[in-house]
Length: 326
Image 1 (cartoon, rainbow, N blue to C red):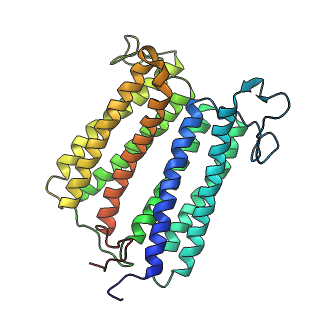
Image 2 (image 1 turned 180 degrees about the horizontal axis):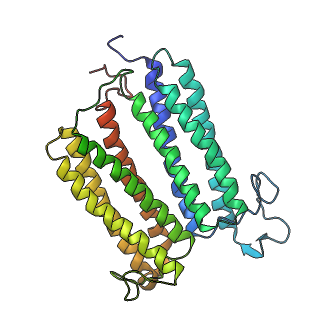
């Protein structure tokens, strides 16, 4: 092993960083497509009104399943699909590239292969979502798989930032378990949030803290869905406190990750409350707040994943500028 990382590995890491960023943007654009009710503005898949580029509008305008859509709604859905294609090609390129780097960094192709598998399943789920007319559970499934794609490309980026044989940080088993539970809680909360959004249940319960005077409404699907999301969010917030407590005597890098997760969750709670009150008080800002809420949730998830990566692989070692291993 040389004192300096292979230049090809530095370049690959840059590609992995870009792929992770594009994947993150893709999920945010997908959220914007959902909250603007643009998901069914292209009635067919993989084309849009039978065309690769549905502009200008076909004769009679943009009409899908009896609904008339504005050009910007079609642009959202079409742009989302285009960005998905670009992301897919980038992940495929990363996998092929990683095969050429097997001798330099034998871990990369395995992680890239997992990302490619999640990508394939995402394409299939995307088709199912269109076929089922954006039914709430298909939207949640679509987001859930997208998060797994982001997880894989993020892990690829972090793997490429470290030595081929890297040592993790020794932590107590409770701390490691706490990070994994945190990741699962954030994941489930986001999926439930997607179901709330796609079922138009965001404003069904009014303000804090109960739902129209009830802590667990019965007989109303939207209200029940909404309260489940709230309880998951509350559990997630409480767990961040547990996470900081169990990480208190661990390595400084682990403590830092636990604090960052807690701070990001606090920000997510603030965005959630803002979305909640936007329905009655500032409805013009609901869509942008809802998209920001999802984007911030993705950051919470990523911060937690970085904490887990540090435990398994240690701190970052490789700079994109070719700084020596250290």
